[in-house]
Length: 390
Image 1 (spheres, one colour):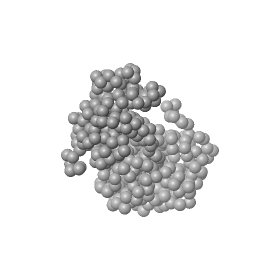
Image 2 (tube, helix red, strand yellow):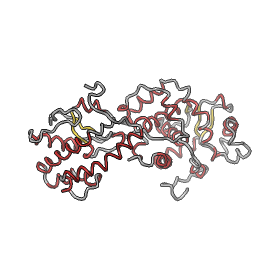
Image 3 (cartoon, rainbow, N blue to C red):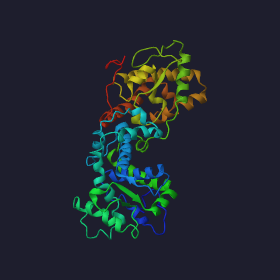
């Protein structure tokens, strides 16, 4: 293993662990990462069953499912040479982004993809299953031109199948004929290894994919949180308590209103809106959360508000902080505002209550993020009612 890898792959007598460690060398697109991670997910989902075939169709669906979350929901770039996102976009899925927020709901996404026309996407299997096996079969491939398009792919199934028991590549194919291949069969020794060391191998592969994606998304915040569907979303109980307490204590003294619709805000019925979409920032910090009427929040979805709303955001946050300072204990106020100070790069708690300092902090933090989010593909300039929201 190279020194920069975060984990060392566990050794195993009789298996080419050094070949596995070279799996992602000289990788210029995402296919190998996504393919291998899809194989791991399928193995895990089928209780590491080494007897069943793993079909090209289900592997394709699993790859597209993984890419959908990073590409469609989080709008990450996969690089100019990568076409897997084009194949996904071509499916024109009728699938709502909110449905994929939890990993357990990925079943619905897989079902939608599987029910689509996968003719174009199926071409992913024309090369990646064969290219992935090169490190395991280097002696057998010595006289095969790996740079010749389709010459190598056509030769690989028969070579891998012949060397299956001696070289022990990860898997063999259901046919020696490249055109007839439709499934892989795992080597049982590799399945036992992967079952025993699944967390380590999955973390190792994920780390390599993260390095690839960081080079293509160098300024994207919280990138590591955007490669996979989160297993669960954190509740907003703490944040709701903060704003409910503020709205209850307002009593019309400041008349807090929704920054998008102008409606009065009520402690009895409000939703929390991520001013910068959660799918962009991937966090639930209070400085980016404001109360809105539920209908307004539903309408906004993951759009970026019009720039006219930034001052209103700051005004609402400032008024909320003033009330919070009055109604919470000193310790509670410090706990609630810790993220404001850290993320907005403010020197002290007192600076939160200085409107000029707060305005400058929000402007220098939010405005560049709005530009970045728009460049990344999030829809900017949203205004409530502008598109028949009401």
